[in-house]
Image 1 (cartoon, rainbow over the protein chains, first blue to last red):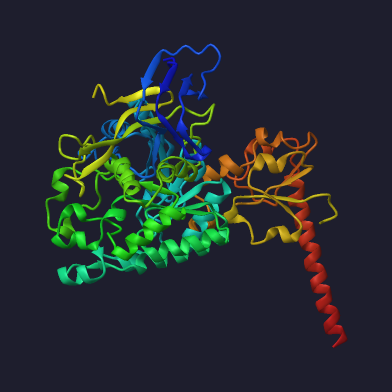
Image 2 (image 1 turned 180 degrees about the vertical axis):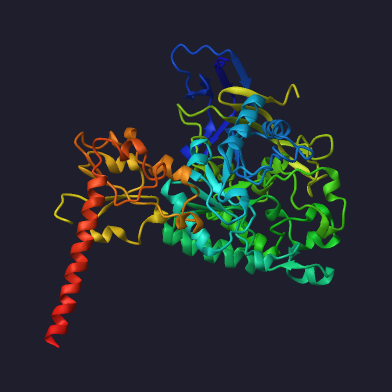
Length: 430
Length: 135
């Protein structure tokens, strides 16, 4: 399939990586950015996209989305979620290795990449397992996983057997320049907890997860990152203190990055006080001080990316007493709108907000997208900043309808999404 | 070091001693790069306990990355000498074709190793006898 020549005109082009923000037309040919501003010589567009009054940005890169395939297709599938991503302006999704079977062999990597290519919506970046079966006992064949296309390695939310295994895993990953994606959690401290340990957990009489479950893990991981020199990324930090530790390490030149997920910027432990299963998150929603700290670190850049931490569930997964429900929320649909709401509320400038959704995560994944310089892949998101809509059962495009933001007013509507120069979502025909 | 122009070590980070560069060697993580224009290649036996100690994922991956094959050896000089103190884990650190091929001096090395050990033991014993005579 040859790529059409596309002219996107009339829009406000925002490309934070190249400090571009202004009324500029975008020209696309052969799946790549051909020119910005003025057309290349002899450019004849096959398709003209009118972006008048809209923002034109790089396609969004979501650092964490569970696609539930293989293994949990009753919740969602690569097909359903890659299409939902496209409808939300997301052109690249990063999928963690806790599928069933676990992504610990090249065959599973190839299966996921093949299915994503078949669907032809958002592309999928795959994280390989740090240890076979995520059991934390041995090293996985990381070189083979990298060869199969994995962009990094992770043990997802599963603990490692010991700090010795963690050390060897970091050394082995560093041998091949692989980034390790870490979920900072001390399993002994978080134990059977289901929400933040504090006044709400005490009042509800539910087992809590202390702040130290995160800070202890971050301290231990940072020491080993520094010693081994591995490139590391902390996924979904939730506490102010942990982020401060990462900021200090970054200042000292340690090769470490971190991200935060949307729910932790809007919700706190108090929201979980009515036992609402949609507020069940692991790691848990923290305090309002933590939330403020996360917002500040997102602005300062210590948190270089903002992700959906998309976890679609079937309705039954949330029909149980709070601790027995499966944690996590469906998040693809609300990623851009709730980021834009942060701009509206004055926490971030629009270019900074776009950066946390595009070049920020792309750099963390070390993949060549998230920007719109000439010659780059033409992944584009075109959205109407001023179009408000409501997230409800009809408007949500993910198969997972489990979100605490159901019924919320959303800011900004995606009109077109392009990946590799192809229109993968057209909001006018949808 | 060892009166040679350059000594290189090639291994994943998990198998390298801390700060090994301070001994005057150059470190490589990619076998092909480390072999480029080498005069002599000394392979070392991979100990099985490295696998249990979670220092390596599998013999299969180790062989693919660090196992010496004819193809990888072609990076070295054409008159390269291949050594190994024995016993060899065939198909782990070294392909049989290389172990038994023309550049290999492994059998002589093993034979010399016996003589060298005998010499060391003899010298140690003599010193012991000398001391007893003196006492």
